[in-house]
Structure formats: structure tokens, C-alpha cells
Image 1 (cartoon, helix red, strand yellow):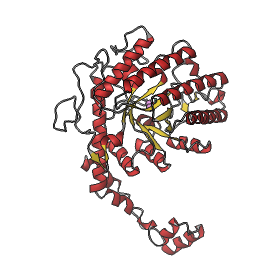
Image 2 (cartoon, helix red, strand yellow):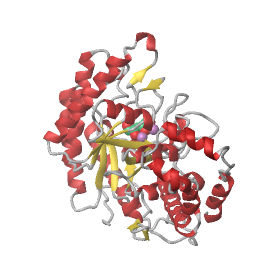
Image 3 (tube, helix red, strand yellow):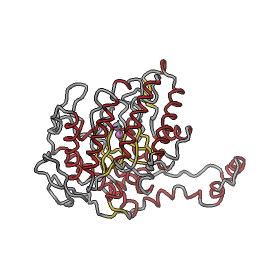
Image 4 (tube, protein in one colour):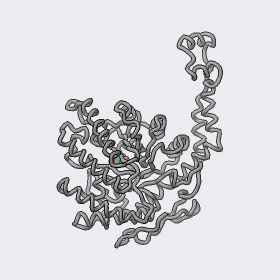
Amino acid sequence: MSGLIIGDREYFKGIGKISFEGNQSKNPLAFKYYNPTQEVAGKTMSEHFRFAIAYWHSFCNDGGDPFGVGTKFYPWNKSSDPIQNAKDKMDAAFEFISKIGVEYFCFHDVDLIDEGPNLVEFEKRLEIITDYALQKMKGSDIKVLWGTANLFSNPRYMNGASTNPDFHTVAYAGAQVKNAIDATIKLGGENYVFWGGREGYMSLLNTDMKKELDNMARFLHMARDYARSQGFRGDFFIEPKPMEPSKHQYDFDSATVLNFLREYDLMEDFKLNLEVNHATLANHTMAHEMQVAANANALGSMDANRGDYQNGWDTDQFPVDLYELTEMMMIFLDTGGFQGGGGINFDAKTRRNSTDLEDLFYAHIGGMDAFARSLLIANNIMNESDYLKLKEERYQSFKIGKGEEYSAAKLSLQNLHDLAHKLGEPEQKSGKQELFENLINQYI
Ligand code: XLS
Ligand code: NI
Ligand code: NI
């Protein structure tokens, strides 16, 4: 792990490197469970998780919401010069990332620097800020987990980006994606993400869905081809979300995205970046989304956060729920971790009224500890309890006799019919859900 990276000015004064002190520690600025070098199931915690800091929520978001302006007056957001401002913000980012001891960050192009009045200016600014980033990364262990282009905030994308009915806008989105891919490659980014907030519709009355999906696929093929031609070897991730900001988003959930990738022949290069709060918006558990992706060898990466049980939208809170996280970590361990080059990106923000700079530390410490603790619990459940055996026993009948023949595709529907006549009514077998549920509580 690298040392602290502090710029001309120290932003998080009085806070040093966050270290692991164990669960007896009363120090709020220490890890109680996340011990990066501790081995669990054959890998260290830091190898399992590959935690990343989301540039947008942590250093850009000022707490504004539809009912009020920003509440967070960041000291790195004070310069009237956009380039100086971007550099100050980057100083703060590297200081924070090095102090919290995470190895990765994720960014949108416009998080790094304000795009300015036109494309030419944006390209100039991106050069400057990525040069600056390279300088800061040099000699440190901090890397880019993924980069992406923000194709949803600017008003030009109000009708979509790659799914816009206007080709001129599609071309503009193409330019932005090319630049974001270039920036990702320049910074040694390990993956590239597409999240399509405006790739969807508000009303089908004015939408040619088939055409928009065809266009989106063509666009992704072009982006993939371009990145590969530039030597990019990482994974591309699609981040499903059912709605918000669009009424209906094309990348609805894992199953929908996988179907899209298969239909348009993109499975080889694309995997999924799943987000907890997006899963719940789609009326799924995150565990469900992970399992669907894992079945297709597409569990690429994860955006960690949580929603709120009492309201429906994407609240992007930091994860704290051990029960939910343990269910996720059981699938994670069972799958053998990410099936691509991903990691766990905290796509989460401190609350609007969490206005102290140190709150950013509490939030990430809490999230990392919650993941670490859940990983340990999940590992204990899988190794020390009868969990795996109990689950396997439910499917025992496919391992013997006619069931085995069925699994080997040796039976016909007529055979099933004859067998049913011979065996009669099947004996009732309990699903034992409560027994399974109790295991999680027991091991917490
Ligand atoms: C929004 C998404 C977004 C993506 C990156 O809901 O989670 O933050 O992760 O564009
Ligand atoms: Ni989100
Ligand atoms: Ni996200």
C-alpha cells in the first residue's frame, strides 16, 4: 500500500491513514473488520473486494436535491478557474483514497473536469486533467477500476444518447465515449462501463423501440471495436437499472441485459456491473441479480450501496445490512468472485445533512467493514454449517436412477409419463426455508 498523497494543501486535516484495529477498537476512524491482508477462502480481503471510490459521489456531489440547493461546501470546490478547480478536486480525491487505503477509483469524464463550452475545449481540458492524474498516480498504488462517459446530465441527451432519435446527438455521444475510452486507457483503467440513464423512454407513443435498441447495439459494437483497436484489453460492463431517470430503461435488469447482449452478439466482451439499489428498484434482491449474472459467466463488477425500504428511489446509501450482504457474499464466494476484472465500487453518497469532511471516512469505513464482516460470515456458513449439504440434498433425486438419466438427457416426455404412472403421487418434501434463514442469523 502506498503512503499518503497530499497536495499543496491538506484537505482532510487531522486524519491519517485508516488502519485495521479489530472489533474491540473504539476508534471511529479505524477498520473493525476490514483487514486488507487477512486471507478468507484463499484470497486476501483486498484481493476479493478490489474496493473503489466513486469520484462523483465523493468529490463532486454537493448534496443538492430537487427541493434544495447543495449543502456541502467543499474546500476543493472554491476556485473560479475550472482547471484549477479540477486539480484541487483531484488533490482531495487522491488524499482521501490514499488515507482510506483503497486501491481503485471510478470516474465519469465530467467528474474529472467540467466539460466547458464545446467539444474542442472539453478535449483540451481532459488532456490536462488526465496528465495531472498520471502524475498523481505515479509511484502510488492507486489505479482506475473503470471509466465511463456521462451521457445523461447534459440537456443534449434529454432524448437519449446512443438511443437518441436524432443522429447528430448519437454522433456527439460517440465523440464523448471515444474521449472517455481514451482517458480510461491513458490512466491504465482496467474496465469500461456503460450505464444508460437516458437510454430508454418516457412514452412508447413517440418511441421506435426496435430502432433504438438496434442503434444502441451498433454503438456498443463501435465502442468495443475502437477500444480494442487502441489496445484496451479490459472488460466492458453494462450497468442495469430499470428506471430513473427514464420511465423505462432498456438495461432493465440482469436478465434483460443478458438477453440484449446475446441477441446482439456482445457476450464475449461485455459483462455486468450490478448495483444493489438498482436491483431493488427492479423488485429483485441483489442476490438474485448476482446469481442471474453468475449463471451466464457475466458477474463482472459491483456498485455497492443500498436503497431505503420505505421509499422507492435510488437513494444510494452506504451499505450496512449484514443479512443482505451475507446473502450476496454467499453467491460471491460460491461463484469464486468476479468473473471478470471488476471490483466493488462505492456508488454511494453521504446524506445531504452529513456535511463534515470526516463523514466521507465514516461512510466508507462502515461500508468496507460491512462487506468484510459479511464475507467472513458467508465463509463460515459455507464451511462450518450444513448449508451446502442441505441445499444439495434438495436435488439429490437427480443423481440417482431415473433422475440421473433425466439429467443426462436420456429420457423423453413419454418416459416421464410412464414413470409418473408407475410411481404415483410424489411424496411431500419441505423446502425448509426457515431452517436456511436461521443459519445466517446464527453465523452473524
Ligand atoms: C446511476 C448509476 C451511475 C453509474 C455510472 O444510478 O449508478 O452512477 O454507476 O454512470
Ligand atoms: Ni445508481
Ligand atoms: Ni452505479
